[in-house]
Length: 69
Image (tube, rainbow, N blue to C red; front, side):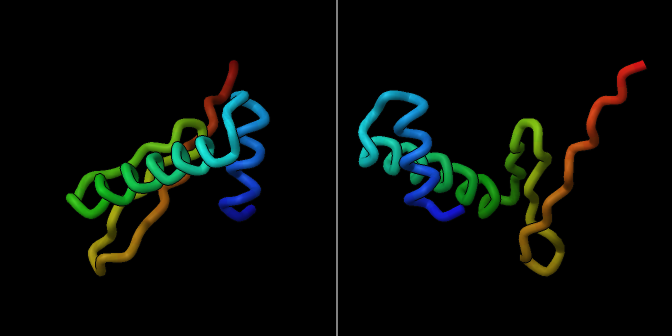
């Protein structure tokens, strides 16, 4: 899915304009990249975590699903 598609879906679900949704999406992506560039990690709830690996490449660690007993 590309950014325009995500922005349109976000706009429909939140009731904001597509331009506002695109701006919000840009802000989220900028925040994630900023944390990663500073050596931190970015948690994506329900999905996992992004980190910068030893070679400077992004690494994704998938979140393990909780097992119900």
